[in-house]
Image (cartoon, rainbow, N blue to C red):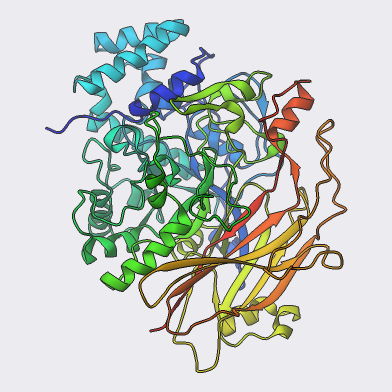
Length: 633
């Protein structure tokens, strides 16, 4: 029997560095349900698609690492909050989104799901074990006794001696069925979509984050046929893809897996080999290409688009970076950065496609909060943190979140990120999931910026200004996430790009196109193009294509800013000036806002705090579209 891995116990060092607080209990299944059903005939459909905003990465008290440190809201509370209702947080504060989400995926860890909640509540199903009964007593006491419970679990996990309930498949199945029933009650086709989902949580090698969120297209009739895969079965992502293939074959359902931010994997997320270090095969590349079509490019534990070491010519590469180590503080080396970030993975994918005939890293972009409070917030002025100890308080900014040999990660380094925009015909599971599968998605660090991105060979400058630009975009080419190929003689790829600011956030600074390509010698390259920008009457490109900074209107003393710089809307027609028709390439759009106050500044004003100089006071929020790929064949 393989060594048992209890969900996220490898990362509980992280949790206990944050602290452990005893909170008032909230029953596992007694939150009032108030969802309404909607007739299928009433569901609005838009052939040109609307953007629907959501979060594909939400943990509740049913995740062991969340429940263990005080989270008491379960899936019902998370769903109520996501759709705009007021709830009571773990720290007994009233919490509510400024604007509800359109959809959400509750992604509690599949390993030991619901066990910690059952222990805390003294559920009869688990209290027969004297060890678990003592855990319940100690967690009721809180403080050092509760912390000791988690340390005991860590030691038992290391010695393959966990109490049986933590690995009991029957208990896991009962929790999964309850979870699906709750999600189904809150799923309102046409109004609010609640996905059936879970997180498969591999911490292979000791804290190397290889986590994936598994999202179901179907409803309970399919979801209930098989229990989720756990890392008790395997910590190898290749086995997860095979499990997904088996699930689809046996049930007729459809799944996709979303890898988490790779910046905490210590180089393992985008290895160019098989999991065991052997050469990557076409079979494995094909499985990854089929089941992993999206990548979480930004979340609370950092942004994983690129890194200054990987992109030294990108002036915006050093954004919300976490690069000290993995989940259990194992230090990171520069070499590990090469296989952790999204842009580099896209470039490596071009090279691997040349060798294998299939691209294993052909990712579209999404984002998620990875909240462990059940509160999905990516709003700087309404940020509820990652754990109960990072919920609003005067102390949260200076908490010692992680303690690496190379330096601390403080509470202020958590980011209020992010949400995903999905361009779908309707707000239903099937429509949203199908859009995710074809990668017509984009990631935002929080603001709900509207972004369209089309690519083809026949767009003209007048198309960008046409009132029917969206229809033209679909008719003449492909949207974000699509492919173009076989450039007609004498033609280069052309693009229609349009972004509109979030009415509740900052104006737009600029739109950039990020291009990556594979040269004839098998080397990869990248280049950033500033294609349209705000205040164009006072700003222009220099000889190297660089653009002056937009400025900064933030008043940190009041946590306010003025939208008197930048533009509310930016759109353009752009043609690749450096196109070589024989070379594989990809293009994606990055939209930047003007500087606005970061959550730390809102806290400083609210609690009248004096923060240290290393705490960032402003942020340039941004959005990243899924790429469009060019293949000469």
